[in-house]
Image 1 (spheres, rainbow, N blue to C red):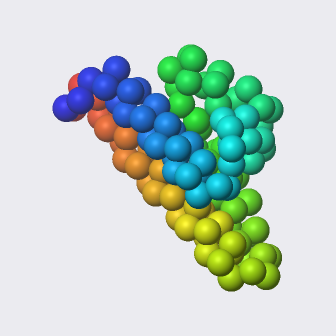
Image 2 (cartoon, rainbow, N blue to C red):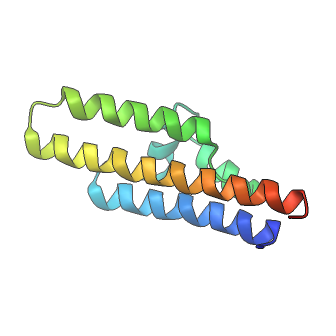
Length: 111
C-alpha cells in the first residue's frame, strides 16, 4: 500500500499533467487560466500546489462541465474536437483522483 505522502505526490502529478496537456492543446496558456476555468480565483492552482493538496474534485468537475458545454456550442468542428478532447482529459484526471482517494482512505484505515 502506498503511503499518504506518495499519494499526495501522485495527486500533484495528475494536476501538473493536466495543466501541461491543456496548455499543449491551447485551451489555456497559464495556471491562472486553469484556475479561472475551474471557477476559482486565479491563485487557486498555485495555492493548492503550495499546500500540497492538489486541485479538488469539485473544481475539476466544474471544469469538465464548462469544457463539455463549450465543445457542444462551438460551431467549428476542429475547435470543438479539441475542447471535447480537453474535457476527456479532465475526466481522466477526475477518475485518477477518485482512485487515489480510495487508496488514501484505505491507507488511513491501515489497510
